[in-house]
Length: 186
Image (cartoon, rainbow, N blue to C red; front, side, top):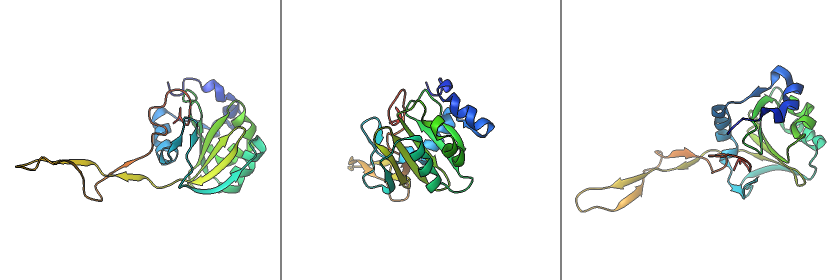
């Protein structure tokens, strides 16, 4: 169940104090729809960067590298949302400057996390042992709904609806996650 183990991020919450907000499930899903869910996934623990506008890749995978990355890409007073690699740990929203300042606490127990820089429209993926990737979040994908044409003698089955009447969808990333992955989370 989402967010049933906030004690796992107690060090982040203690370090950031009242400036950190633990997200509800609905808030988590809303922010994921603006970020993580717009990327396809590879396996269950990473994003597929093919076709994405990758801004930077860094080989380092420690708190110092995360701090440098966030400071290099976040704007002043930017909102950051930290998604953990385990769905039972709630996502957190806080100033990006606090993510950088408390990078050790952010990475204390986690092997993977994703940080959405809301104002910049960037997503940072942290993979322990592999480094950091920074990419621009793509726009939403539009998938036209299917429409069935039925009438005298037609019976043609589903046909794509006209352009501009589609529905916005993301990838499977973040949809129905239960335990671990890019959302276990993926």
